[in-house]
Image 1 (cartoon, rainbow over the protein chains, first blue to last red):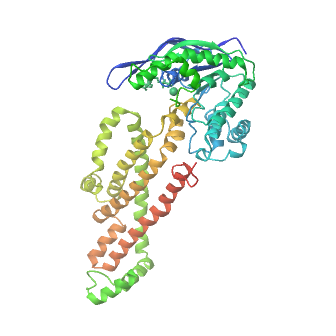
Image 2: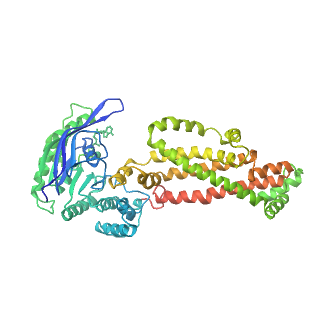
Image 3: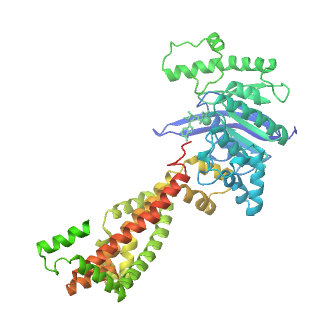
Length: 285
Length: 244
Ligand SMILES: Nc1ncnc2c1ncn2[C@@H]1O[C@H](COP(=O)(O)OP(=O)(O)O)[C@@H](O)[C@H]1O
Ligand SMILES: [Mg+2]
């Protein structure tokens, strides 16, 4: 792991113009520093502003207050130095897996023969060798995400921005992909910003977990996970951090539930939270 | 079956041939029309105009549609106008076209292209607007930028299902406008041949032309566009044989 800072988000706020004309503060005064080669998760309930932050770093949205620096430069447009992997994979349905993975190289003007060769190699790397010539709709959810990861990795980006990439997958597939992602990260040393609403996922994968609170979105607390790599889900250290994160989030959950259920008398006890062992704040509730 | 009824009805009712031709007259006229090159000539001329007009309307329509999709100001002004214009049958512009261009090919091509252009531009606009934003973002993050490469590699293929429908509808419009235009304006073609047939009282010729129009229209739609469209929809996973 290097010691250079890779991403610096300094006192950034973002407001959306709502349809009724009012302004809605999605994130408020967020400051994050991510070092080169670090694996950082942004964790929080749906709607807390995680994607908003990622979209700003990606360069999709340039209207915000504060400053964002990537590798020492301010961001102007989206670009292949910080490729985004989306929850809904975003593979182009009119291209085969091979063509999808080669797409970024084509934009860089790499010749057809070379880019297809390199794409095949990258596809084998994510264990999709047999499916290179399929169209995206012919793949399972997990295979699509692998293809999307291959499409990002082939650009050899310094930074990988992942917006709930595994949220739509079933549990088994997700566990497999956790292993693969950790493996890729350990081999390539990329800086990864990983967004999730799943506590276990965040703790298992990350060096650091940034817990967000909602409305407006702010960074509430930061947890460092010093467990050994490759991670072992039985590691007591992991469990310990997971529990601390849950405690931290319980208040937040209560706030969200009250708001969504429109009921001020509803009480969400911390004990309940532990007993039910809810680690998924998104679809679970 | 239809053919037998036709000939039988013809004999029973005893229509005179200047109102409606008999089967034999029609077949004979068809044959001689081909032998004398009259029909082939007309088909060739009509198709030539059609293809020119179609090429024009596809290019202009797609560029217009792109503008509508990308610039709200254009959409609110010209886009609105186009929707209004689309409801006007192309043939209604023929008198204007004749004043502007005279009784010639240009007038016919103009009105043939007109209706198809509006349809194509609206289909392109809808197609582009319906592309899931995630594709645009994925492309940008992989370095397409926001210009020509985005247009050719993402917007066009992303809008393809809508574009294909637009092409089919435009083709049908163009085909209709063409025959109507040829009927009135000058120049060798199927519409003109129809008019000639009327002048000569040659109902067999007229019927042949109608049949040719129907056959060409069906063939082109069914074997070109429909096949292509079905293939593409399967490939895009919109209408898949193997549902995932
Ligand atoms: N384009 C937008 N216009 C208006 N409000 C938005 C827009 N995008 C997101 N929001 C709002 O900002 C908040 C944060 O959204 P988001 O960052 O997508 O949350 P998360 O990714 O954490 O689920 C939500 O309340 C959402 O409704
Ligand atoms: Mg999100």
